[in-house]
Image 1: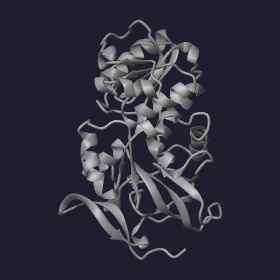
Image 2: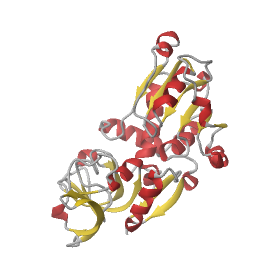
Image 3: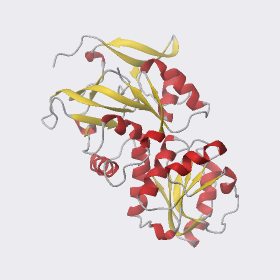
Image 4: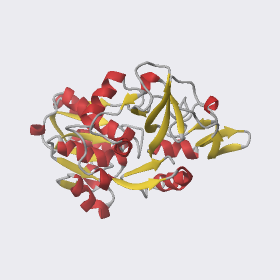
Length: 331
């Protein structure tokens, strides 16, 4: 396939002229090296993308760089025999929009080790409605189940439930057979969360305790907030339950005691979506395309944006006025 000499990309700079971003016309030789070149069709917006795009978080480690930690499209050229022209593929994390050019570009050059064949059962758009957020939620469930989490232990709490990871977690966990209690400060989104599968929607005050131990009410959960809310969730988890930490929307600090761990055997697990090994990535995406595929992707995808609309999307997200997932259409 003959590639265009120039193509649009959302590129971020940080130099003597300051932190700035915008759509530029790039050539393939201006992108990070890689064995696989794809024609990007879809990407998505994660909180990390908003931080990188605005400079309000130290995400990018090289400049200039194309933003976007997720991308899905078709292979147009490959020096790796595992990929052929026309193959549908996706990539999430793996240094995209950190140390490598990311997915906000009409053409993207990927490392073969980071490129995942699109599993049967998923479209490119569906893969990006999930993206890093869905991968993180599914990886959290996999970690809990590896640690013997079971529905019989009780409901799973999901904090930050209206966000991308939270929304997808509510859907994925409920489909996997767990009762889900969504925790959110957005009282106007109760119907949305129940539609996704939450049996109960709790306000933030449900996780406002400051005591080392409380009556156990959750079998475990996924925390996207950090700080006191994670501390409270640990204090209210049933014996042998697992809590996964996946975000720090409120705080990166954890002021907790060892009491839940040594008295109830509670486990605090971590997940990282950016550098999960390939075999784990493939396993998670296969589950997301089959028995863990969210049933309400149309409801979770609350916005479809173009590259030109990204700055507005970033601002809305950082102001806490977004919910669900935003996909980016790469025209």
